[in-house]
Image (cartoon, rainbow, N blue to C red; front, side, top):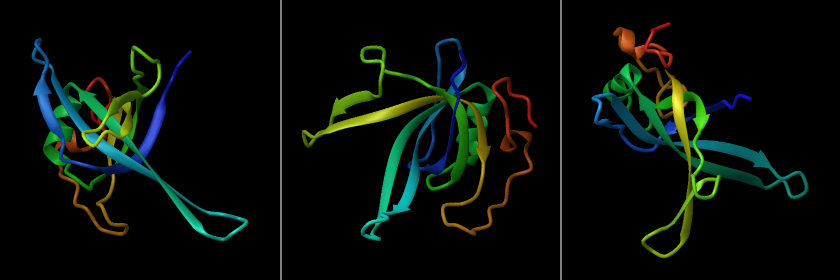
Amino acid sequence: MHQRSTLVGNLGNDPEMRYLPDGKPVTSFSMATNRKWTNQQSGEPGEETVWWRVSVFGPQAESCNQYLSKGRQVLVEGRMRPDPATGGPRIWTRQDGTPAASFEVNAQTVRFLGGRQEGQAVDHPSAPGAAEVDADGIPF
């Protein structure tokens, strides 16, 4: 069996890069996906935002750290990573005492899309790492 998730959303913060003990780069960022609808009975609009924690490894991690920033729109394809203890999302208690959960994804592909606002033109850098890069670090 194979599991693959595809997400399109906006970065909630600037990426943070670190290195594993073996020297492999890892970049992490949060991203929000949104869903909007209209209630058919009342005609009232509804909206739902889901937050995701994304980890990117290898050369693609370096490109994400260099070219992405808060608000940037991205497409992420990867594997959801469940909490080992529960098999579901990671659950914790916020500082104010309210419960919270996060969904985590190990990205195999990150595509840089547009800017934060719809219709905003974004100049894509010409560096090879700015293009789509697969899990092996080969630019398309």
